Picture 1: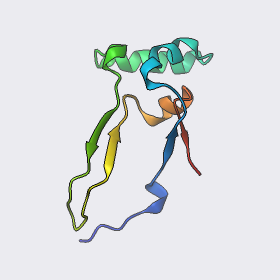
Picture 2: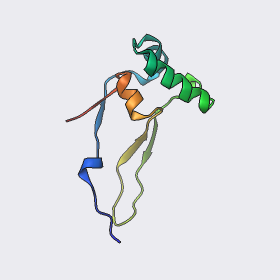
Picture 3: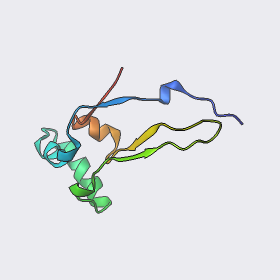
Picture 4: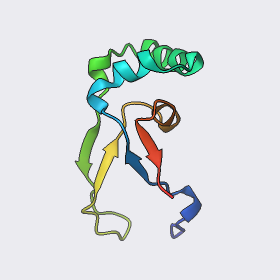
Length: 91
């Protein structure tokens, strides 16, 4: 069965903060619930702030696609990164 792309599932974000200082963004957020979500996630996976790095890699070809793009694995879920104002959704 062919893959049918769903544009509503495709999102683009721009970097709006400094990923080298995630700890300061967490400590300085006025949103206590957001701060708790980040620390709970870090505790659940035994992570330190040093572990929260962006991973970057080339997109491999597959499923009829040529690949060749760049993909990024973010260190936290998108909703938390948006709440910390480290990324913002592009329109």
